[in-house]
Image 1 (cartoon, rainbow, N blue to C red):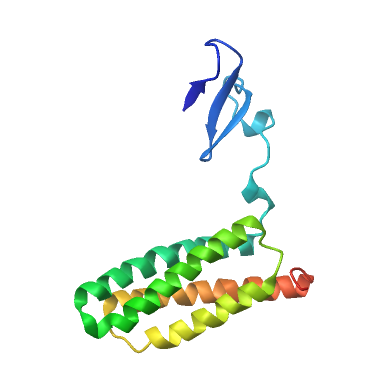
Image 2: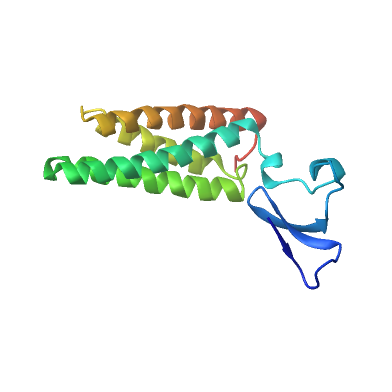
Length: 161
């Protein structure tokens, strides 16, 4: 979507690029913005491990929030489960925010999240309610990708202070 900036007909226009607006020349006909020299995106600087953790955390946040809502609707017998799911969702959200800012800074924060997720996994594993079992599967995937990311960072000597 393009929105004129200033006068109509000028060569400088705002262009919607991957959810962000950028200033620049209109791409030449038949060529994408990447082909005419677009600025690199934030995601271009992230490793595949970090991108996987971010995606898994976003999915975990959404799934855990949904699960917490389902547990609340089911009744008070799932109160602890609902609180655990909300905690997991909050931590996943925080993880996305922290890793989006500087994913290579500190692995000790990742380790705390990992340990918290492992504790939550143990708690949630006691329930046989389908939304909880779905959340446990997504949680397992997030634990796996986070563990791999931490191990990779350790091997590369990144994020250790």
